Length: 173
Image 1 (cartoon, rainbow, N blue to C red):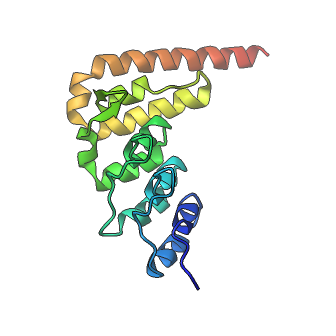
Image 2: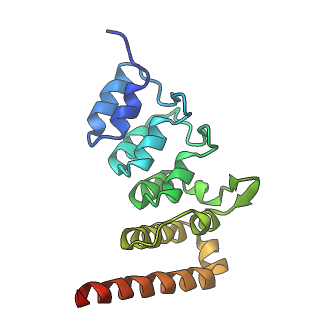
């Protein structure tokens, strides 16, 4: 049976890390990039599947710094899409990523600056995702906790006000 190199990406979006392990045993390349440049780790981070992220990170030759065609890494994908479970797993194994600079339109940003600048909606889910992602980043970045604390607290206050207003509106309905 021929090995489909893209199958590992499909499995990375799923719930079963054992399927990923089996595909790796069959010889799948953990760093395989499909036409858009995404890897299985990027897909697992986007899908917010920490068990799949862990399985992939257990492969000794995984390259966590590969970029897709949009110049995104698994780390920046987890931040942009507020996938805090995957982000926490990724940083747990590669805490040095919190010091990475993320380049967007020629501008280098810290992970927290990137999170703040990332396009988002104004719904409750996004505020919660933002807050949870911010918490993961600050848990791993002591320097950011000191340097950006004022900005972080300001953003949390705005998010909390929005959540309270939405909750109050819901109760009135």
